[in-house]
Image (cartoon, rainbow, N blue to C red; front, side, top):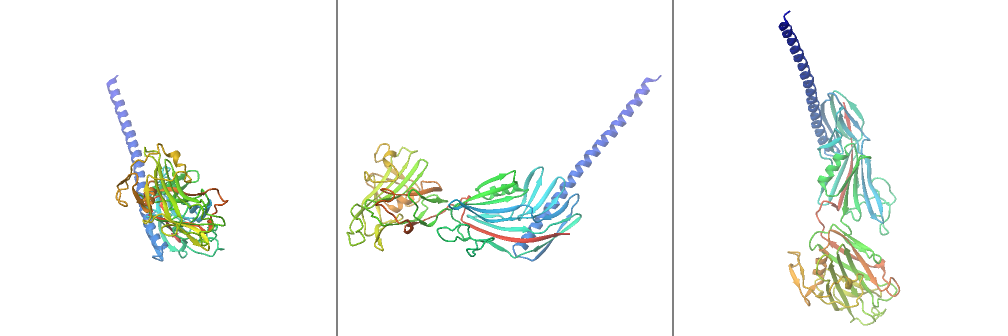
Length: 504
């Protein structure tokens, strides 16, 4: 028997079997790879078609055209569909007054999607999104425009439902005129789109008007593509962005610029919110008018103060004893008032900064006692350059909201430097006995605090008794330059734009 011949035949058979098996594996892998490449190419073509649909829909939805047609191309192994109720967008103005929240807008977005077993590409909210392997990427940005504290939201809604396979075409039409949501004005009794706020503000119906003041503005999107929305919010703003995976929502919260302008005089220990103030000497106008009620202003002190972390500031004015109710009824008008400015930063080794003027004429000037209807009024212009103060001096025992003696380590008068370079003549160092204007002091000390804090009010002695303030007739004005940081909102512009997208 020829064993060598048998071994040669067996080897040949094994080689042929291995070759056939390898070829089969190569074909199988190659076919799978080719299928993946084809699917990816089809998805890319669909993404390009959706981007074109996005542009054409914006033309129709924003009123620049009446009808637009887009060739979407072959659907391959997937299908195109439009839905009117997929996803929604909501805008809320939170804490606009007394913890009240106003829902400014809440409506479905709708969408047009191309979907296969692995990939979903969708036009929604004026943007194009790609969902695959449990994650979302943005193909083109949505209609959400934020710049210079202005948020513009032309909400484009798809108001049709359709499905098509094969060679698809989309026809876009406007289904309604553009509806202005914010700003807008309606009757006090109206409800729905553009309605006034749910609660009156300061006794008057508050309309949907700019600038947006107090509280925050929150934009929430519910969508399969919520992660893409959240990432876009993060790239466009530095607002507080959060996601809720369970509810598939993304939310961006923008702070309003606070109470800029006229403000009512708060309750004792109440406050005015300062939010979005720019760096440096940003305060341009700060005045107050405090009117006497039915009592006397004898020994009254009134102050504005800030406590924020290690830093504290207070400006306090004292009405002299003896004026009683006679100041505006033929009494003496040559009384002199006392006013002090204090500041401390506990994180430094500096003692308390103390500035004072104990001989302010009561009958004229930026700090004075005026008369309205026979009642005494304290008028103060904190941004006036016509009122000087002396560094290092203060009135011992003068009433204040903050215990400044407790904050003062040694009670010495250390030199103090104002170092907001380029603002109001700084850098400047002050020594005991040096003078500076009330305007410079106000602008400098406000600039030592961060972009958000509360300006409190205080007065005494006592809450009422012989110290009575007519809050309804008292108030002030506070204006300041605002920051350009992208976490704040001053102006809001929202419109609703409905379109139908027919697929065939």
